[in-house]
Image (cartoon, rainbow over all chains, first blue to last red):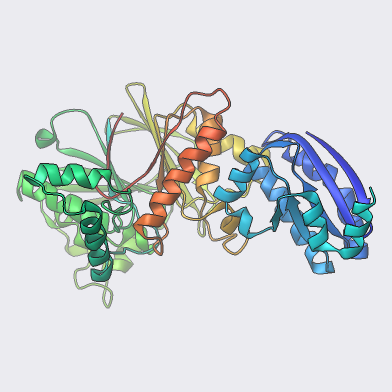
Amino acid sequence: MALSTSRCADVLLLRPKGRIDHNNAEEFADAVKPYLADCKAGGDSLIFDLSELEYISSAGLRVLMLVSKNVGPNGGKVALAQPQRVVGEILQISRFKYVFPIHDTVAAGIAALSPDAAAAYART
Amino acid sequence: MRVRFWGTRGSLPVALTAAELRMRMARALVAARGRKFSGQREAESFLDELPRGWAHTWGGHSSCVQIELDGPRDQAREFVLCDLGSGVRRFGQELLATLGRDMRCTFHVFMSHLHWDHIMGFPFFTPAYLPGNTVRIYGGHANLRAAFERQQDAPSFPVPLSALGARLEFVQLEPDRRYDIAGLNVKAKLQRHSGGSYGFRFERNGRAVVYSTDSEHTLEAREEIDGFVDFFRDADLVIFDAMYSLADVMTVKADWGHSSNVVGVELCQLAGARHLALYHHEPIFGDERIAEIEAETRRLEEITRAGRSPLQVTAAWDGLEIEL
């Protein structure tokens, strides 16, 4: 599992890559943690680009839930975008599709979160 | 070994309503499109062609599972049960019809815990009223007898525990210790549930069944996951509390003490188990919803198999028998 990040105005874009399972869910949580502080301080929103994520287990979904619980109280939002087929089905079967907005593309997800971020993303 | 499910519903028994039955019958008639059937068998074959949630019901009795030992049924005098939900009434009735009142049987009952839905069938378990029978109730809780006494006492029920004809024994088991009971090697495991619950692993002649209901998996610690993977290791059948969706368990129903189909699949895959029985169905779910969960769980197993041997998935129903 690897995590890359970028920022578009007030939206933080996180791109996990590979597999998140019981073996490395804690590593995923640790990797995400520093960015939560930014969101908590500034009320920024966060979008996970899932286009390079091959699999996510319940332990990984738990990390997404913890992220949401941390970001939400400060006015930030969490969204998911562009899941691969397997991850998309996992989100459906686990009913996480009712917990997070899931967008077909990262651009659509960012646009739903913040007009400023959408404009910044369009310029990239 | 053979496992028979007498009650598979969680929390509260439920039944099909008249409106639901009529709707199903109307659907089946419409689907038949005027087809003619020469007899019952042909009609039943047609029912098998219909969507699973139309012509099948998962039933509504609360928790009760029998682990049937090898040998002819009509000669058995020792019986092993898990939990005494409303499903145990029918077990008792069938046994009475087979063996008669002078049955002289011993019932070994393993209690996951003492919440009402898991003990409510006992006052209606006829063999407990018959002299010559022994009902030996095992569990991890220290207050086993008190829970059954309280349920039988007025104003809840008119027949106190002390008035039952069968010999009653209560045996407290220690978790993580192996016991030989009724020809089975048994181990209990403490689980996360209000007041604590216990899962049981039964082994006999190289076969293993795990009964793990009313158990929440927080996924917070690797040790917790590993503990259950060890408990489920290479089991031929895991009977698993899949009452809620994973999202519900992590949000509105966190700390309610139950688990999900997703965690059931993951733990069974990690443990190399062969068959997962989804159990303790949410009482508000109708048959079509349970059929959907079963299909989705099979799909989840398929897309996450990753080179492992296939894990069979069944949403358990009242009356299901699984041969091991």
